[in-house]
Length: 300
Ligand code: 5RP
Figure 1 (cartoon, protein in one colour):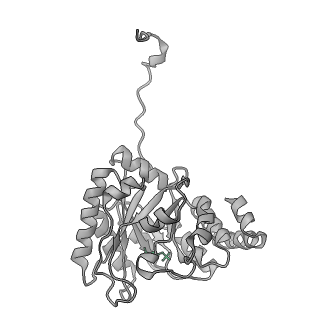
Figure 2 (cartoon, protein in one colour):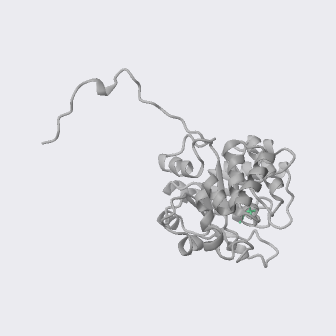
Figure 3 (cartoon, rainbow, N blue to C red):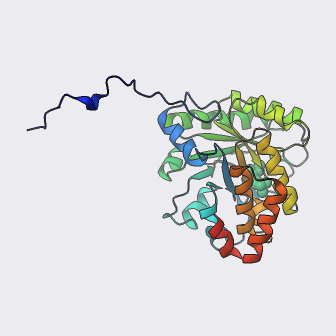
């Protein structure tokens, strides 16, 4: 016999059920599964993320620092909030015991050997993202590029599939080899990507007017790292980006090509989640570097 429902104080009839909002910009009306996946990527306590981008092999092959992902990247996993990688690397190298959220590269086509990189197609089925328990997928969008319409259409198809499955889509402002990088361009590109349904946008930092890029984009922006800079410069760029409205970073080369990647990701984490100033974060980097990888791991 089922246990009888008991009347009494446990119904808290004097307390209305709570109606929590959601901490990420433009995400409050998403369904539960979407929000839950976003909350795995963006730390709810800071509202920000340190994603480690290691997807470069999808068009560059064995990029410097990613020749042996088992040796260079797997030890860094405890220190990131999420990993951005290809499904090939996920299946072959990333241990399935890893509890970190995985965001999967879902576009591809031309290799670095081609002059025109915008000739991409969707390179992964959403069903496979779900099978792999992905927390999201990412795709290049070449606004102004030769194959602009196709790359926009690739993204909108992926967004439709993502909405169907509850998997958020990160649209990436792809600049190819020669496109202009200024606030005017990134405002345009980020806004188009968000208007067409991406759940968050990855874009580059610009010195002049980055806050107008984040302000006019209705969904969270994560800062792309770009080519390797001296550590203090990379930490300064990450600091400025989050202070000017970015919801974190998706950085690759500036972490895994650092002379001390574990120390660098810890310093980036302090900038992103604790608003640590660049100089202080650089001192942290140097201190952790001096202690070796173990020191950086303890700081995580
Ligand atoms: C380019 C990408 C990359 O493949 C990658 O994620 C870039 O990372 P980084 O520039 O920080 O090395 O998304 O748009």
